[in-house]
Image (cartoon, rainbow, N blue to C red; front, side, top):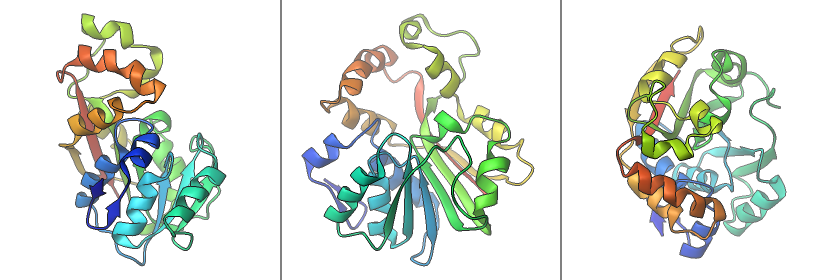
Amino acid sequence: MKFGKRTEFEKKFYEDNLMGPSAVRIIDELAGHLTLTPDMRVLDLGCGTGLTSIYLAQEFGVQVFATDLWTPAVENYKRIQAFELEGKIIPIHCDASQELPFADGYFDAIISVDAYYYFGTGADYIDKRMKPLLKSDGFLAVAMPGLKKEFAGNVPDEMKPFWVDEVNDTFHDLNWWRALWSKSESMHVTDAFPLTCNSEAWQDWLKTDNPYAKSDIAMMEAEGGKYFDMLGLVGS
């Protein structure tokens, strides 16, 4: 499967390594809103199985710090080796909700795909965790599933069986995220937009044999394209 100009994954490898709506389709579209050059040092925060890190290294030649909590660094390193990207991608295991093990002003960019909504909902998260790690001209770019419009406590009947606390706490619309980021004292929103890949990203995920994907099928059938969106934000 071909993405961008230089990134190609075998179908089985691609499907076996998805952890949710296709992070590769998402990063492929998100990157079109960013300026990335080979001299950059990029933190891929919540990189999962490293597919986004592989994409960033191959497409733009950036140095990537592939950081994730749920996927061991040793597993990501094997995938990095398979693509001969040991000189471009550094796998790291850590928790994005805690203090990150990097120097202040170390990164040109922090990018997070299908992960930020799990740890970045705090009003002080950008100022406390993100902005200090960025160079003065660095940027934060995130993309994640969300809502077309906040339910505001009125969850549609067909969605109630799936609206557990975790979903309620993490799925928001673009205005909600823009308002949250506007509380930052050190970063302002430079771009906020829905991504067009929402449907394709979910379809790729639901086709896999991952048991979590199987459990999402009923939710997505109930949603029926009415409520979910894929959101992108960039700040500096």
